[in-house]
Amino acid sequence: MTPIQSRARGGAVTGAVLGLLVSVTALAQDAHYTTRQFGNRAWLLGGSFVGNPNDISAVYYNPGALALLGAPELELTGSVWEYVRVSVKDGQGTGQDLTDSNVDVLPSLIAGSLRFGFLGKSRMAYSLLTRQGFSYSLQSRGTRLGTDLAGVQGLDLLSTDVRLDQTVSEFWTGLSWAYPVTEHLGLGLTPFVATRRQELRFQTLAQGSGAAGQQLLATLGRDLEFDHVRVLLKVGASYQHGPWAVGLAVTTPSLALWGRGSVGYERAVQSQGVDSNAPAPVFNFQEDLPAHFRNSWSAAFGVSRSFGESTAVYASLEGYARVSSLSLVDAEPIVPRGTTETINGGYDFALKPLLNGALGVEQALGERVRVYLSGHTDFSALDSTPGTNALLGGWDLYHVASGIHFLLGRSRFTLGGNLAWGSKQTDRLAETFQQLGLSAPMRTLDVRYFQATLLIGASFSFKDTQATSGKGSVDEAPKADSP
Image 1: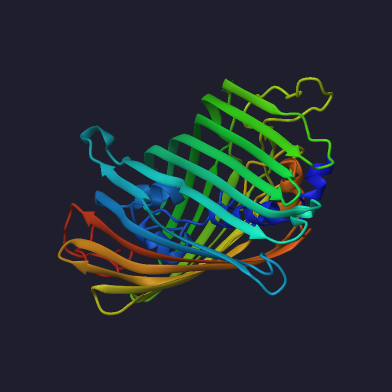
Image 2 (image 1 turned 45 degrees about the horizontal axis):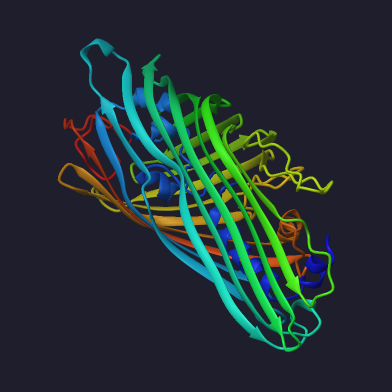
């Protein structure tokens, strides 16, 4: 680290960067698997119904259960409003917590059955889901008056402007096929094409002056941008007999089809009347680079049991395998002109293995309304990497959801909410600062996270016959216990 960077470590520059990075880190959720669900009842049950989804969301949770659905369906997870708040203890100094909040509207799932005469007993369905989707543009500006600001002797005026933009959008498009091996056993698969676009841009500008003519101007900027297309497969089996249902779903690692990206790195420090050895300027942009991304193996096991016509309990576990460290773009090392310094201009990506669980309860209130209560874990898969880590979401979260599912005519509507929270002490930010050529004022931070989600959705059945059996048959006349 150069003297000028060392002297600036405790000032407004690092304080503003710290606040900004903390905010985006908590908001991003790019290292979590179960922050969002796909389907109306899926949100209310926390994705716990791998054994028997009992609706078109089986295309994602267990394609085998699709074979045991009798009627064609169309489901729209309509509007999802998400509010996120993060609080960092002493984030702006002792006794001064740093807080940030964000409200977003999220699309989630569109899925429907396909009806072809040649299918026979087989079932087919299509799906389009937003696996990840968030976009943030955060900015911090400030001016400070004081003595020896940023650790620079004589500096009495310092202004900073820090900005971080992050966008991640990942869509999965699937075509499901399922076959009822017996009356109670269904097997199915869903090949997905996953398209991902990710952008990450960081820029900070600091200007300072002193009464004796001291001048300081420092800029630092980094950016990443890439597009990637891959394919993956979900395979599932569902056994449903009497009050019991058991299911298993496996997701394969992805196979890359195409990927291109770019990176940029800018650094410049100019000073006057300040005794320092400023780092060499860097202006490096690398375009049209090969880009890489992949997901891990995962296996989900679920079981459910109905108690009479009114109550059902669901439980599931899903384990995810490790994704070894990889470079998102094949960037060349950066060597500033006239120096021997080497800068890694790329970004790394790695996921650790983990296990998430979910438990949900479904209760009928008459024939047209059902209520739900569920909880599930949402642990972070963020893993350490040798270089700058492109993932920002590092907090273990816990979710509780509740809501109602009701009938109007032959259509089913959902209204509910989900709360998530978590906290963790982390030194992740200090490591990020070092990779950016800065120094954080504190090594560890206590971060507290809160998220509230409101869901409004609908599903439509295209077949209406007289009821012939208990809960679970979509061939029944619409009522609350055939969601």
